[in-house]
Image (cartoon, rainbow, N blue to C red):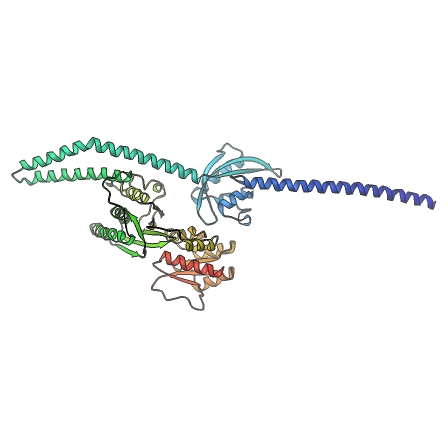
Length: 525
């Protein structure tokens, strides 16, 4: 009996060993299959991340997965973006419209399978993307795969092409107008001169008619000349010389000051035109043309303040270029006009020709510079002109410093969008990632949700005691660098209860402020 039991146990043991060997073989096979699957998944993920278009998987409106391409374009990290509602990535002006499209997708009703929208980057900037959608199944549920393709370059190319076509058409029109009307202008001018010789009686009424005809003729000739300047075909331009940027700005401001006083007196309002000339740069070009370009923008700022206000003209050096900022606190530029303000003959002002800003744009571009603006309807505008410095050499130090503070995360708290943009623009050029808030409460919320290296707060935007605010900010992010912007007349708040790392006084010298901010960031790093 015992022998039978032993044989039975041996048989079972042998069978179990055999089964164990088979299981080990299957386990080894599964491990190999698993390793192969992991390798395949890794290759697939690498392939997805190498696709030049961004891929975003959303379900129930939330972002579940996305490839590295879209994260690199927008500047987010996975933890910043996973799980958020996709419409939160859309620019506020387009969010409601895009949300409606996504709701149509989810309902299964007919809707566009692609659209163009601005996605908001981690630094707060907006970038145009073409979004195409594919309905798929993910984990047995309906989901949507979005294919996001950056179209900034395409839009810029189309814009440049459109601008070139406008310029070509304008040049053709200017030449045609001049050729066709030139002889008539000459005939009219000669007729006026002859009629004057016959007007021996000194009839003032006739002299008045001659004067109006001469003025009208001069205006017609001036329009032709302005069209030629816009089209880059102006004749008899002055020779290229090297001169101080401040020299051109000073002349433009002096000329505009007279216009400003006349404009204000005729309307019974007060306009203060102030200049802060902090640039020491020399630029090369046509002094008269550049002075005219600046004058036209200042004139535009004067006309944009029908109820009175202040206009600031500032020059400074930054990143190896010479910069001009022309700021007003007037009516601002409505969104519907922003893409057209540099177009010839476009104007929202009754009786105006609409050539001033077009001439400024053409002159600045012809001198190798750039011109752009920031504005919100009802909050004024800031025009920013950049010129290359004469004989500019490669500057190593600014590049080195820019690399060192690249990817520094900065939160700026200011009520006024335009003022906020003036400070954030040069920091973005240096590679900083900017987030914006309008008051202390919003700023503290953003400090809790993201990591920042520095906080820049305008005292006027803080709706709580400054010391309490700084303590709360430092409690949220220990070691946070803090800069406070204060009125020049305000006492220095740099005492024990505040402990700000940097005090910036108004009016803000942007170049100096950026250098000080960079120094604080570098010291922390």
